[in-house]
Image (cartoon, rainbow, N blue to C red; front, side):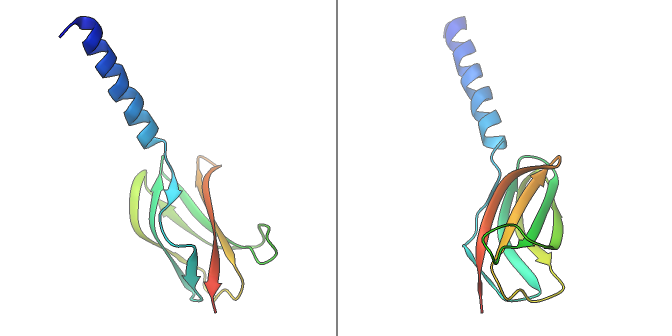
Length: 110
């Protein structure tokens, strides 16, 4: 293998690794149960951060209902304690270093 081929393969691997590690998302359904604990399932974060759940009943981010810290990478079975049962839709924001890197709105099963 030539030096040029090795350099190209190394560059491709490095680029792929950085793209994969930069992905942040909520990998669960768009519906949650009306419970004081909201189960978000798998949350992937590009860095250590926090999931914040807000009221989303009017189609815009409202009152903060609860938070849960997450680690960099895949976080399975993420659950956020709201202390109350939401009766309207909610939105989850994933923040890393204070910046929103992913969001998902959820319909609440009533």
